Amino acid sequence: MRRCLQAARCSVRAWGPTQTPCTDHGADQMNTQSLETRIERLEAAVEVQNLMSRYQYLHSAFRNAEIVQLFAEREDVTIDGPFGRYFGIDAAQRCFGILFEEDLAPRDLRGEIVEHTLTTPIIEVAGDARTAKAVWNSPGQEAHKFFWVEGSPRIAFWYWCKYSVDFIKTDDGWRIWHLNVYPTFAADYYRSWADGAPPPEPPLAAGKAKYDEPPSVDTRYDINRAPQLIPAPPAPYDTWNAD
Image (tube, rainbow, N blue to C red; front, top):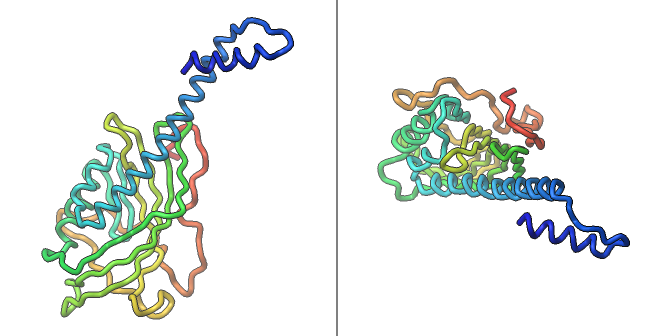
């Protein structure tokens, strides 16, 4: 690649009026490094998009235990959503390996459906290509046997939300670092989200899947609430800053 860049630069100079020898090796090296970084960041954007899409496909197939391996193995992993906030290296295991895999999933999956799409992405990879920030809108639909409701009715409903996710590059590739889920609305299939109460949500987890803190913010549609910019789209940045 370096030789190709240098050859290209020399070819351009050969057509100039002076036709001086090309010896700008330092500039060539800087241009090569810049190009390599740009390529790395472009590849990273595709990789984190694929990672998040894999998360959705596994969730739709009720293979939530496999989602655990999509997370980084770090003490500062966080998961924040309508089901509570989870912190630590076992956050993904407690949330997806136990809560979604065991506590909320019925034993008989016939008639169940969970599909959440990923649209309107904004992905910002850090200048050093070590971390990335991204947001998505997520239109979706679900149908469940509500075994936490008397009579265990099967209810079909719309479920829209937004994702704000931080990713980090590890020795094993890109992994989810901080996952934030912001519900937009849930509405019975036969009623609008502005008409009546949403389907009853399951109780917050207890036991091994118990959250560390309750959800940090309520973003669900409310006829008495104005729209908010939550989550805020990420801005370009050079390197991760915890602040």
